[in-house]
Picture (spheres, rainbow, N blue to C red):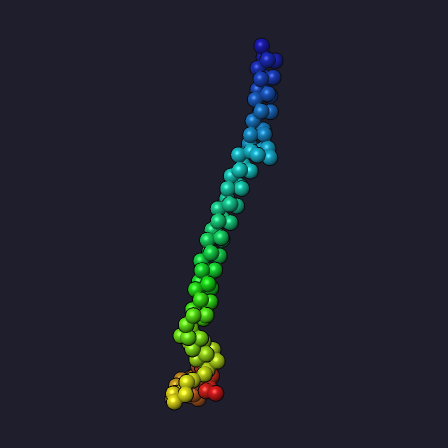
Length: 106
């Protein structure tokens, strides 16, 4: 009787092994679920970034407002008959320093 009980216990353990630790076991499935959740989160972030870039491209293609804004802030350009005023802020030594983003008019 004792030998039968030991054999049945051993068979139960052998049957449980693939369920928990095998290639398609519960532990592997849980790990893959975590990886899928991380990939979906990253995809959502990338979709939001792509939508933002798409809207910016459409704005640059269709309207002149975005092009004008970039020309002003990135290239320091001004329109005809427009006055450019640059305000300098003094630093700790007392000498005026131009802001980092400001460039002289061309």
